Amino acid sequence: MDSVTASDRSSYQSPLADRYASRAMLTLWGPQERYGLWRRLWLALAEAQQSLGIAIPDEALTGMRAHLDDIDFDAVAEYERKFRHDVMAHVHAFGDVAPEARKFIHLGATSCYVTDNAELILMRRGLGLLRAKLLDALDALSGFAREWKDVPALGYTHLQPAQLTTVGKRATLWMQDILLDLEDLEFRISSLPFRGVKGTTGTQASFLSLFDGDHAKVRELDRMVCATMGFATSIPVSGQTYSRKIDAQVLGVVAGIAATASKFSGDIRMLQAFGEIEEPFEKNQIGSSAMAYKRNPMRSERIAALARFVLSLEPNANQTHAVQYFERTLDDSANRRLAIPESFLATDAILVLLQNVVRGLEVHPARIRRRVDDELPFMATEELIVRFVRAGGDRQEAHEIIRGHSIAAARAVKDGAARNDMLERLAADPAFGVPLEDLQAVAEPARFVGRAPQQVEEFLEEHVAPWLSCERASVDQEEVRV
Image (cartoon, rainbow, N blue to C red; front, side, top):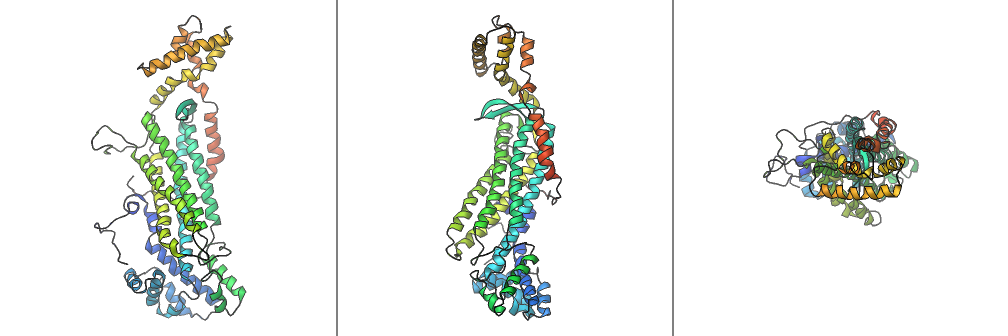
């Protein structure tokens, strides 16, 4: 295969690599990391075979250890043109630099020994990178929720004004989705099995022959390689490959993260349209090439765009698993080379954007209060009826009076009135007889947020703090085009 250099602008460049994903995730899924893992897997296999009695000389292992990362990709490409087989190309290239190990490299193994086991390692590490970024976003939202926990805001059901919530309480809904993703991530990271040392069709026949029929040594070989590569267990049985259902399970978690971010981004886009909360906008940023005044929620829109891509890949994995006939078919290979890395790269890019947005959210309390004031008199009608009855009035009469004035006030607002004057209309109606000051006291926004402020504090203390207190990997704060 001819390689394309990163500086070759005459060929297609993936936007995930060129614009969006972080350096850490790009490095993880890059060829150096993947094929370096292949060499480490071959070394682990040879070391375990030697310790179990196979006559592999020490100098062979020393030669392998000395050349784990100095991969001659030009030589590999030449071998692949010759053999039309990527694994054998790497076997020969490794043997060229470690000639004393040549005849022991890949001994008893099938290609999936390196391809599948490396893929599982990469996926587990990728989940760890996503976990770190999720925790960073959770930390930022934690501070945001606490800062704005008491500020009343319109809550919505069916995209229509419902009852009041608070700005901080709404943020806890975003955070709860992140916590659910983190729980899924933790389970998948901790339970992800290794393929291990299973042979051509999963029967371990080649290794049983290598150890002269000693079943115990074959089982120990699998256990030793597993432990060397940092896995507690290998999949109990396999065909030539590990079950592709595992890919579907992993991409399900990854897609869940993308869905969480997309839901958040949709809320931010609507809140920015309302003028209540805006994503960050840099000093020299241009919102529109034609409309100079525009401040578009482009980060949130990009989250939504990338999330749709990730969500489209999740069912792909189940479809691949569904057609893996018997011990395996090769129609998974080219598909997985695209679907798995790009799911991780796109979700990583989503979380880079998410981190940026949540750390730069701009809240506009005056606009939030104005929108509350436009709707609150309608929401306070039950309290107003109670106040009328306490003053000696009839409940049904109060309902009719309020209904008439609320309809008139709503119509006035829709026809261009500057504000909702329903309370003034009621105070001026002799049939209602409740002073304006009393009506305004009833319609104080803080009376209508329920336990929202307390819920924020309880949620942060009881559910978020334990996650944030965990030791976690540092988050790469590199410059990424957001």
